[in-house]
Structures are given as C-alpha cells and as structure tokens.
Length: 510
Ligand SMILES: [Zn+2]
Image 1 (cartoon, rainbow, N blue to C red):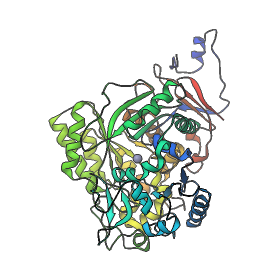
Image 2: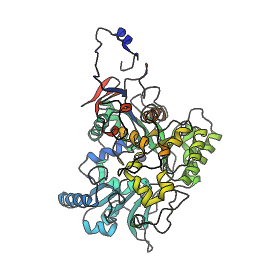
Image 3: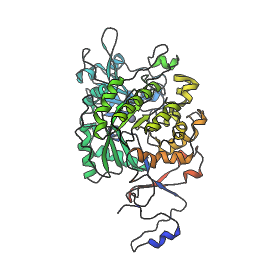
Image 4: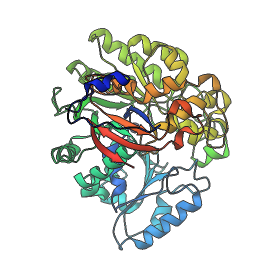
C-alpha cells in the first residue's frame, strides 16, 4: 500500500511474498526522497507558458549580453500589442545591464505592456502601458506591504515593490496563464526528475486552489504538496484548518518582514557598502533597507491566524527584522501557547548566532537559503556587505548547534531545484568562483542530508509520513547514481538521479 514494511539486511528477504520484486541497486544509493521546504511551484508553472520569457541568471541568461539578446528576440517575436513579461533579471549577476526603468521600457515597447520581474520576486519594473493596463495611476494608494514608487514630482517611476503591488501589474499580463493543470503537471514532473517527493508552496492563494485540486483529482500529481496561503491585511482565509490529505494540504500562512538583499530592502542593523554595484541598484550612500511591515502590522497578522491553529512561516533576511518577528512570535506564544507550533523563519540571511539561539528556545524552526552562497557569495562580500556580514551569510552551523531542526531550500524560481547542490554548498560554503565564506559555518554531510529530508519534512508537519526510510512511512524514495557520503562536496551536485518513487510508485526514471 505504498508504505515501508521493513528495513534491514538480508534477513528481510524472508518477508518476500509471491508478488515481491527484488531490485538490485547495483552500487547505486537509495535515500528518502528529497524534501523542498520552501519553493513556489504554483508560481514556477508560469515559466512553462508562452507569455513569460525566462531571463534568470541561474538558467538562460548568465550575462547582461544574454539578457539583451533574449529581450530583443522576444519583443521582435511577440505579436504587436501583446504584453510581455520577463522573469528573472538580477543587476548584480547580470552586471552592466541598465536598470529597465519606465522610460527605457517605454522606448522598447510604447504600444504594449512590458514588465520585467526581478529574480527575487520582490521588485518589478513596469512600463506606462503595463501600469495603465493594471489601473495603477500616480494617485493610486499603495497596498499594505507593497508600493508603487514615485519620483520627487509624484510620478510613477515604474518600480513596483513586493507581492501586494507586483501582483497588480503582473496578474493582468498572465491572465489565464497564471495557472493551469497542464502547466502545473510539467512543474511536478520536473520536481520528480530532481528527486523531490514533497514540496512546499510558500505563496499559495485561493485563486490557485481549483488548478491544484484538478491536478490531484486527475491523478497527475508527482509530489506531495504542503502549501502556505499568503497572509492578507484582513487576516482572512477561506480554507478550513482541517483540510486536504497526505498528498496535498494547506498547513499554514506566509508572511513577510522585509524583502531581498539583491534589491536593497532587507531590514538590517548595518548599512550596505558604497560600491559601484550598490550605486547601480539605485541605493544611496550608506543605504539601509527597511521592513515592509511595522511590528504592529506583523503582530496583527500573526494574531489573526495563529490562534486558529495555523502554522506561520515568515520571510526575513535582516538581523533587525529577525528581532522584530521573534518579538512577535514570543508575544503570541505567551498569549496563545501551543506545544507543537513549529513556527518558521524563512531564508535567515543575516541572522546572528544569538538570534538562532533565541529562535530555538521559542521552538521556532528555520529554513535557510544556502544556495545564496554559491551564486551571490562574491557579491555578498565584495559588493554589498563586506567580509564580516557578507561571509557569515546563512549561518547554518550556528543554527544546527542550537539543537534546532533546519532545512535548506532553493526558493525556486529564484534558483533551480538542486537539493544536492544545497547540501554541497552548506558543507563547503564555496561560491561559484571558488571562494570559501566563513568555513566555521560549514555543516556535516549528515546534517546536510537531514536538512533536505526528514528535518524539512518536520517543518512541513509531514515527518510522520515521509522524510526517512522507516516502517510505516510512505515509500517516498530517490535512487542516486552514487552514495552522497562517498563523494566530495565538489562532486556532490553532479550526482545523478536515477529514479524517484512516491508511495512506492515511480514518478521518474532516468
Ligand atoms: Zn520564497
């Protein structure tokens, strides 16, 4: 029935029944299927649609030149007047690409809506047609937690910050392409090919419920999903706490303290460096980011959902922001104590060892975006924060040393789904150019495996079902070409996935 019956050596062959099939792994490695604790599969699906052009630095466009070529080609190919959405620009990695402000985008396409979505998702640039099409005018009020930037004359610059505002300019372009069972099925197949059996969705919305429900009803789902609905200012959800099944369930609510280090809006106690790169981002002298919500706003969000029984998962990068949300969590836990709440913090870039200790004492569990060190490791030290704050980004060892169960994630579509690369990065803290950042924060292979399997499942309230090869749990498995414990961290990302099983059923075969 899709569950593990027994685990052991040759003696378990005695348990063979008449229909038992014996599979010789022939030197390959059987592991629990990988768990992605923080991703956006319902958002990823748009990348499979024709309306969206992928310009991510981690996939198609490594350089500014690649972006130029892709943008020109896409605009020439799109039917006149049709809107175009580019996803994945990063001015720090695609160095030299000019900021696509409203005037530049108007030049590129005066007669069509064009939106360029920054790779982190926290910023988008829109042209005049896109702003008009979205009904955004210079006197449109900012939504809570987001903003339409205006210049000193009160005119829209085209910069649009954070999900509540970004979705306003993106949604009219995506239209029906926002999600379909076919697009989501392609995303599921890709996740299975990467060895993943359980995946979160950290920006789920009511709008996407029919699409995901259809995928599971049609039997086309290839991963279990645990979803977090985006919090809203009114503190409402139409999903009952008791919902779903072992395949799909809404377990919590997502909220945000601050934004992205690559955009300049994370809530830190220390300033950004004054470098050519920070100037190109449009950050002023000794720039310091701000939170997107006040402590009172965050408290009213957590206060609205947590007492109902929901788990909360909060995006935070800056150390000042971490203090704010830990204060909020402590306050609600004092008023509404719950023995097994598993309150979460997401990404945790600049969190300090003391903050991890405080989080652990509160029973808060952290999911770390360690892949930042690989792609942005050099940028963090040289361009943004210097050796002290930059090199100590994502202190994974400080976190596990508190006794906390942590996970690693790719936050796809920000980086590609690569659990083995995450493990390698957390073990070696080595950037793309080979630079090692604060080696004292490296974790062991065993800690890395837990963070991509059973401890990630724990954060998703699914460790009683999956995440380890244990009698009674589902046979959610991955077969790797080699044993991750037998290769160096440098070789680990290239170990191939041979097969993936969900509840004993193959979801991918190489
Ligand atoms: Zn995310």
